[in-house]
Length: 486
Ligand code: NDP
Image (cartoon, rainbow, N blue to C red; front, side, top):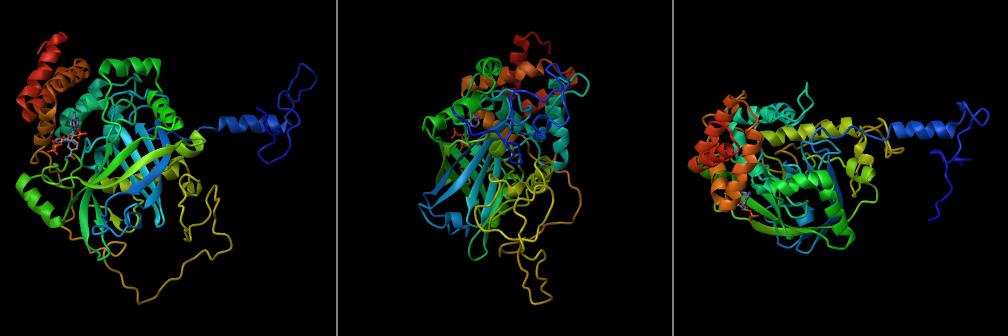
């Protein structure tokens, strides 16, 4: 394939891209070979810091189409009418592994969606699980460190993982999902996605409802057995990337149905009083029987990026990116992420990461943010300060005209753990598994649990017992089958 003539990054034609400039045919090389120097310098700087979490991922562009009217709940223009389409970008990922790690590891999968709306970018940065391991972001760095490598051995450590989980019973619900068959999905096309947090919607009257987002795969749920996932980790570590990229190249565009659970604050208060569960606790789901799924639309992925680094590696999502008509909730984990994601992108990609094409809004944008490195769109000659209005502004509500948020209680630090029920929902998940699914869960848990200290093991077994006695019994039997003395 013929290629255009090579130039330096500054556009200067390169005289020779095969032979360095040397003093005589045997060298040494001359410092004035600027093309060689620039080529090596740029090569040395090719990597940006990898994400601390969700480092290994795959991305694609697509389209979201509204199929059902939800304008009674939200004034967000992307939902204005049935049939309306919005351009999207999605990135799927594993969580704990490094950029070169295997796609098929047992791990939650990131499920990050961006909607390029006419009112700015809306990022819904979720997972393939509806719940999470912890409910307070102050524990997040500690939790993630237990999923990473031991500081001395540089090995992953079942002891570190279960030391954390066994001291944090609120993790049991997601631990159960992680070690079930859904902990090793067959690529990214055959899994559901969840916004996971409780979010809010605001309608044209400023009224707020709380919501949970669900994305149901139209490809059907498909999981890998633990053995197959392990085999693929060695033979095809980029399995999920290959599957997604290949399907889109072949024109087999994956689709997900977008669904919504909706509740007013009063409904959540009544539900919370009845069940004892906090509707803003990320370790819990809203049962479908209490809050049915409403259809909203469909999103499809139909275009592979041209350049992985520019478009997938540099994609910088933040759940703080919410357009008018879409809002946050008191969920403590969401509140932590509203800060942490943008902060991570400032460090990882840079001050002006929103100037990059994959991150840039596709609607007009205007503010007085200026300068910083790589300022591609720096406001031109426009004034670099905003009008300050001395009086007569009419502040109200939270942000885009929504009603004020009632606060409950004094500012302080609260530990609801212990008093809260962290077992029933984990038990509900266990009880809906098929007999084969239960046995796989027992076996998947027995592997790492056979490597932990006896105190850690006993503490974790007690949690399984409290969720369902058959759960604890099953894991014990699987451990005994591996020769573990109990
Ligand atoms: P439902 O019976 O109404 O829903 C069960 C949910 O569990 C469905 O979304 C189903 O997804 C999903 N599910 C089925 N098999 C598995 C599995 N092996 N691993 C993980 N999820 C599975 O029950 P409830 O709404 O009352 O919830 C019961 C339990 O189901 C919860 O405690 C929670 O652990 C789990 N769950 C609940 C969700 C929710 O938002 N309410 C979402 C996902 C899981 P599918 O339709 O794809 O089979």
